[in-house]
Length: 352
Ligand code: PHE
Image (cartoon, rainbow, N blue to C red; front, side, top):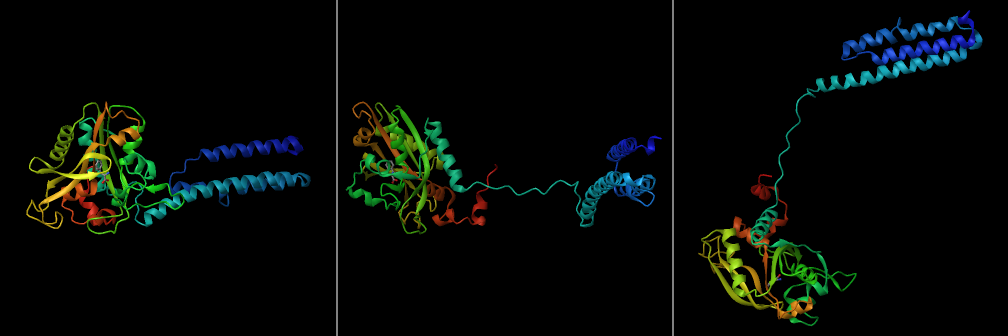
């Protein structure tokens, strides 16, 4: 008889157990009740695993080992299957006990906001963008050439002291840029003219931190090089910027100044928006606040970048983003911009 034949018996057992396995895998267990029905059907005292084990009694002694292994493997399969289902429903159950409804939508996290410096920088770039100025950026760790020498500030030039520089110990030729004029040099060196760029970025100066000064701050510098660019172009460009940024009522004045890389040079003041010209700490009681330095690019600078100063001329300007932001929003202390106090920053939340 087949059942007593060793090979035939084992074959039949394997086939049967496989069949059970696929039946088990197809069982629809959807909740605690069907889970319990599953347990009774397969793992209960009269369940399939127990009755399969009973088969052992009918197996001859010399075949018991193999048959035992097969049945044991089947038992482990059913138990593992059951444990996995149980974990699923137990987790759901735990959540319900804790008052969690996993079908509810998640919490809505509050929206973050942009930093006021970033917002104002975007405004500045957008205004100059309308006049055709493209954005150019460069490295914050600069070499002496791009930050000083090419800008008509050779080694022994006294004006180097105007900007207290952080040098990098490793290499005396490296420094943290003191202005983004270095980016203008990098762009001019590319030799593609005409050039009309604005250079935003963080700059560093070794200054004592106070309400009016910081050892790092943000600048936007501009540069326009073409044939026949004049000081009148510079003034009109800056007038346009001030009107767009602060409105029609603000007054503007230019004062002669000195920068090694521009000639002639000027500084531009606007009427103080904080005290409306009456005099306050921000305008040092003068009613005017300086917002930028500017001038016609010095011929030496053009020559350092291999630009023909006979054919081309240009203007440059540099403004501090913190100063503009303080005036625009009435902020009286520069340190607020770098302290990350959420109560301060929250006020500038913009729709993202
Ligand atoms: N680089 C100058 C500064 O940081 C600003 C400036 C730029 C002045 C361009 C004139 C022309 O102070």
